Image (tube, rainbow, N blue to C red):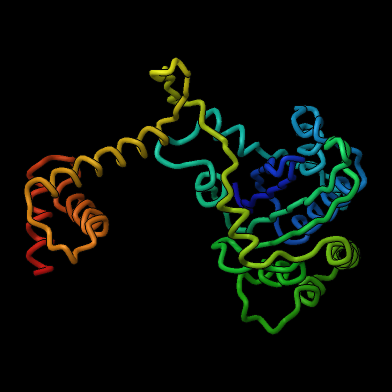
Length: 299
């Protein structure tokens, strides 16, 4: 389906950890995205919720229904739960952040909402909420305000001198006049109740470790101390790569004379990358070819 986009809501817990809710939509763009932004913010600011509720599936279900409902258009679009999709069907070789933020089909941008909550002394009831937001285009190239998102999404360009509301006005319809009016009202509400993220804040949002693992391909080990640990395929691949690099470093140091001025870790990194160019398999022959080539180049 077309008009694909995503909306993310993040809420901090009393201990500083952050809980994320993420929805994937078809047919959510332009004025519709702005409308969902406004009413999702309004519902969150007007709702009673506590640290307990953040861990309650009922809260997640309520939030998803609010996000799915378009109150201006009196319509509902059923989004899908990106977090649940990753947990149940996650891809082995990418982590949650890459899956959620980079790998979703998108041609109408994304919305990021960040709720910074101040809790009572017991760390349960939310006493104060600050909201930050960011719209982005489908390439995550820049942080956009609500109005700038409308401008980009109307023309899929940053170069148009025509305003988005003037472009809509070109189509003669009393309904479209209402659409312009309520969209402007929604943009004003967003600007008044939320502050625009900086580029660094958005980058931090995207790179934060949400500790969400895919249940697909999980393997449980028992450590020597008797502790049970569960790793995903993504975790195991990372561990395997680190282990292979340690073995490669030991092999190089044992079999080759490395100048004292050489940065050994940088050398191992370059050999590893070049080895993969020679051969996708981690075999000794491709390692030797890479080692010889790198050492010859650095003499």
